[in-house]
Structures are given as C-alpha cells and as structure tokens.
Image (cartoon, rainbow, N blue to C red; front, side, top):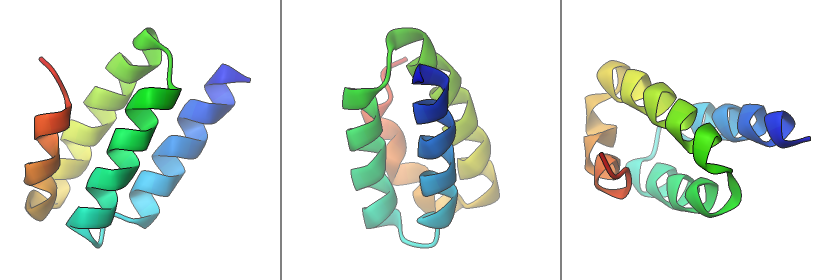
Length: 65
C-alpha cells in the first residue's frame, strides 16, 4: 500500500510539472503523506525532475537536506 502511494505521488508530480506553483503544492502534500524512507526516494526523483525542468527549482526549498 505504501509503495503505491509513492508511485502515485511520482505520477502526479510528473503530470503537474508544467506549473511550478502547482508542483510545489503537490510536493508539500507528498511530504506530509509519505513515510521517511519514501521521502528520501522522492527527493531523488524530484531532483532529477528539476534537472529536466529548471523552473521547478524553487520547490527544492521544501526538501530538507
């Protein structure tokens, strides 16, 4: 079940990556819903997505190092 939530979150983030504001909102929601080890995996995914779409860079502030 938990793995399904992570995969769903990745799908949603891919679909909203055209709009930085919406992307940031979805990142915030994901960080409240996922487990700590899933958040670490999500951070890697988000960083790779930001490399493809530099305008999403502003959302990195929600990811603690």
